[in-house]
Amino acid sequence: MLPSLTGLSHEELTSWLKEQGEPAFRANQILDWMWKKKADSIDAMSNLPATLRAKLTSSFRLASLTHTHTQGSADTTRKFLFKLHDGRYVESVLIPANPALYGGTSDRRTLCVSSQVGCAYGCKFCASGLAGFTRNLDASEIAGQVLAAEQLSNERVDNIVFMGMGEPLANINNLLAAINLITNEKTLHLGARHLTISTSGLVPQIRQLAEHPQQIRLAISLHGATDEIRQQIMPVNRKWPLAELFDALDYWNSRKNQKLTLEYILIENINDSLEQATILARVARRLHAKVNLIPYNTVEGLEWKRPNDKQCRAFRDIVKNAGVQATLRLEKGHDIDAACGQLRLKQETAEGIIR
Ligand code: SAH
Ligand code: SF4
Image: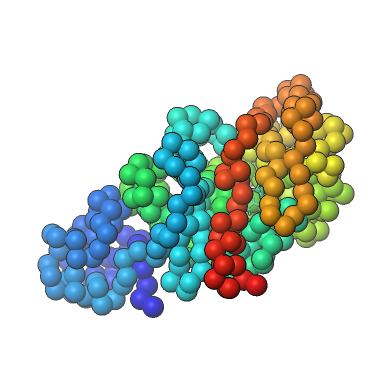
């Protein structure tokens, strides 16, 4: 399988052109065709000489994803399913004019991007963790989701959250290469402040990211305010318990000046006690973090449920009354949003890739 042209940074493309004896300025033209004009074939790059187009065609394929399915409609949340070159599937979710949940401005289109096929972290409530880990996505497959979503919706994506399938920080090298494609002025040119990485808490990578020069936002999937509760549902907590995670987040705070987000899924009778709310508020204050409360989305094959609205509000009020910025979205019909991994699981199961 030929590599994807969209995976090349400006530097990589320039050095490839040099090897071919082509002038360096062609790199700008090619990037412009791919990322700004959104060409759908190498042949459409009409200001390139035919010889160069032929060389490109014999060395690269253009896109790394094939769109196969859309769930949802233009004025609602849409989930796109993409087939990869090895027959695997990933998905991205486009959320229109979403309120500022992760620190972005409101009235903006947010794309939820996948970073891996499956996930090795096995959180007990999560569809992506269910079928285990298959492979990392490469940079063109990650950034390509943004390009494809813009092509399919005919709209610009304003915010990106790495909250789709996979653990982004377990694939940090490809993730950072994709972020370079997303933020670079020659490619997608989206500000780093409009990107949020969500992680289940990989301590060494959080420290590594704290050193990264760009102001990328960070959201932590906490889902339990004590080790006891958290490790029941998130095996990663045994490797990096809360004390180590919080130390890494203190370090993050010492290097960065935007607020952390703590994500907290509310699951009935698992982590929704008001005692957990009190401890969560204490944690958030210590970390100067805001809290995003998410009523659990049911996953086929799992027993977990969301608490009733009254319980969700009582939980939120405790956090808010402690002086912490907290959001809670109660409206129904958003199952498509957070149900990471579910569409892809259905597709792969139907094709017999997963049994
Ligand atoms: N692996 C990363 C990012 C992908 S998951 C992480 O864990 O942060 C993105 C978010 O969706 C996480 O906060 C995750 O806990 C949450 N999530 C997973 N399954 C969910 C479900 N069924 N309902 C609501 N949120 C869910
Ligand atoms: Fe992986 Fe995140 Fe799902 Fe946990 S919540 S299994 S880390 S994708």
